[in-house]
Length: 128
Length: 382
Image (cartoon, rainbow over all chains, first blue to last red; front, side, top):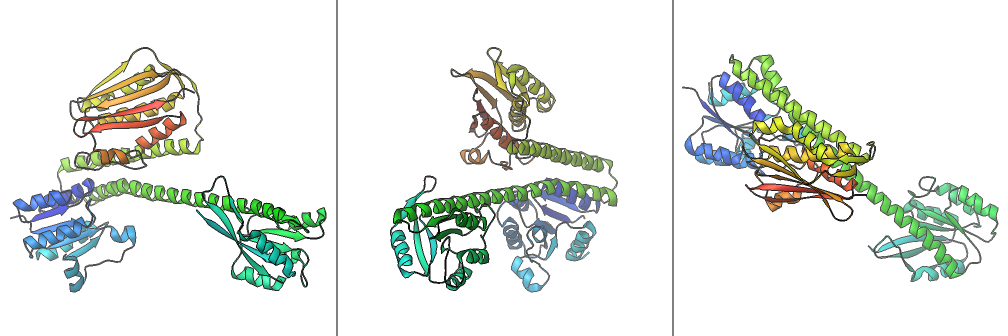
């Protein structure tokens, strides 16, 4: 059965692009355009993986959502996607165990993300 | 704002230094354009060498410089320290007043040529001293204010450009993302998906084009470079033209457009400006309306001089008081669940407001969430 990926991003075009490509790659996609929509989607289903933009409309929305997902099930892998590095020059990563525990995410990708790279990360986290 | 200006008195005569210090000790001036008083802190140097050291350490605001010093003339001191700013002295940090016992016109001219701001002839009364200092202080304080305003203006400009860069990068990023999907064929083989990609790309590009057009309007208005042609404009005719340009857009959402005007109205204005105002208001009223809603344009003359009042009603999503308060600033778009799929540059209402102020008028709004908004523009007849 196709694995379900929750994508959370406040940019409707980015959301559409990820959905198109992930569906073509054989995943079931649940799009959400913000923290509220994501929480609502999580009430009805448990995704196999979540792809979360760090900067949502709500301040710290991405972090809040990571925390929320990990509280539902620690085993759901969360991939954070962020433009924070290119927009603010902030040094930020989730490459080590310590950083991952701190950001409550299993990986971090900098926007713009190349789709093959994203797919590799997803496969690694889904152990495909 | 209470300001203290530092004055350095350079004179080898102790009596002169003390006399100047005493005359300025309790001296305070108030300037018409500045809140609060300006006072003075007087420091002293008994030789050119000491003065140069003190100036090198911290430049005073005003230098009261004796022309005839033991080892070095006042002019030499002036050469060494420089005028400290541009030729007109307004951006300098230090104004020099040359104090001279040889009150010849030549001395004064040569001092001013080398950068002195003014001169004072010995012997002088305390009142003459204070009047010369008052003049210099006035200039310094106003120059300081001018620099502050210029700085604030640069800051506003910088913020505008930062937001603009972000607003232009967003659609570029979206279109680039779609093009990469097409290039890599990474959305599979379904034709419909690629149709959607093209549609979305075109929408984002036209949004960007609209933003650039708005931006050009805005800069032309702000720089005052727009060629304005004031003639007697048939306002009703202009309104009909604007409504017919918006009919197609309205029809897509089954929105009815209506114009209410009592009689022919002519108003002394630039027709293109009137059309920009009307077009922004009408297209907003359509965009932020509900399906099957109405847009009502009312135009009337008001007051003895015949001011023009344009109001545009819609039956749309409306706004909260918090939202309306932010509405007229550059790039402000009200973002919420109801507006997330509506594209806009965030500049339309800034443009309308700036145009209205060209006519000594303004724009106002009253709004009710989920019921609709009424935008009213008043233009004064010149």
